[in-house]
Image (cartoon, rainbow, N blue to C red; front, top):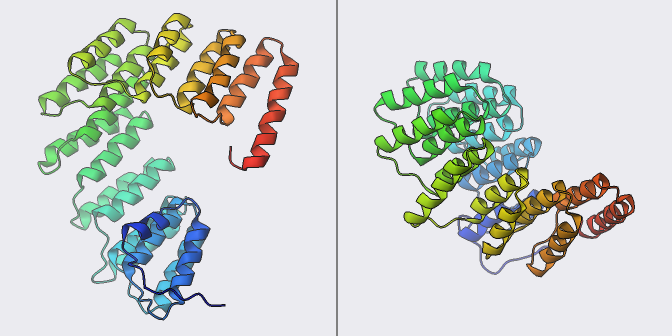
Length: 359
């Protein structure tokens, strides 16, 4: 029986956007198929662009191809946004050849030339796939086409190179950004650079850039301070870590749950149980990640009784144990020879996973 809706929905409303962002792409596609059957349905390129973006994020490039073909059968002409969304659906899922073929097709269409955003998606995908050899070619093509890098493009390059520990090209990209005169570093640039240095223990470089970005007029945010805390802590500079916490307090930056998770992780690695207990008492709102950090720390310290207490406390706080929680506890039980307890917990985990289907 065909379902008839009394009033046609606005496909560009916030409720529609929420549907397209659903983690279950199949339900979104079923709703879309239903909409297409309604007599009042009017196909729009914006709707198809959103669907293509969703399918790319849900790792469904083949479905994206079908949707693109459906759009053509509806009599719509693809726009730059539609083509760019299709490029993303292919590129972000490793189908670089398909993505480049679409870009080449765009070049021959008068009103659909690839823009900075299109190329930014290609660059982001190459970084994700560690195809750094392709980035120079993409940048050259942009230059030959008269397309300038945007702030987003530079940030993708800086963040990607930083996470890949490619410091020279990261700094070159930052210098290119500054020298362009049109694109200026922002807080994302700030955090990407100091985060890259901090993760690799390059503390002096991190401190240098922390000062230089402020000279440029950028102000640190809570993410910046969390990066400093984690970087100092992982490198064993506990005094400097404490100085950052004190500075935050003076500047009225309240620690977030991320801050507390970082502190628990650091003190856990240092086997500083007293400090961990102190943080636990300060925490007003714990989440699963926080409990995982502190349970892991007690497990590493061999304090399985305290670890079990925290596991029980999770339910009281409304935090659901996840696969990391169970794996951490099972490993801790095995480490102290509690094989039977580990087997029971493993059995409980498998049982709960079968019930929920998504642990």
